[in-house]
Length: 131
Image 1 (cartoon, rainbow, N blue to C red):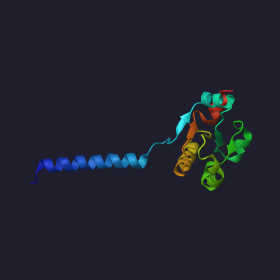
Image 2: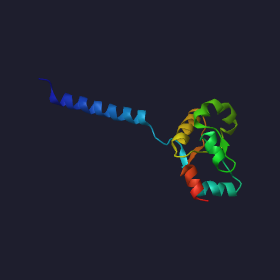
Image 3: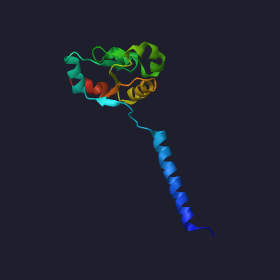
Image 4: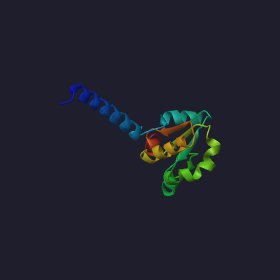
């Protein structure tokens, strides 16, 4: 029989590797920082409006959107990076209906070098409820 302490050490090492691997693969669900609706409204009222991007589909955007929001559907964000490049150093706020598409778009922008990407807490339903 082998040394029992060797098996324990090997098992601990395997568990550590597994935990680290899971953490790296999972990553944060919401990569970007967030901004509250009240913070966004305050910025808009003070003249410091960030770039607001609606990542919903066109029909959702046309049915209602945050004033001044630019429509860039989440499924097309990577195809519009050239157009968005001029905003790379500015604060960008993304929103959708539930947060899923905005989070995916935030990851795409962050991977392309955008440093000031935020997700709107409550997304569009929260904005509508705050009127």
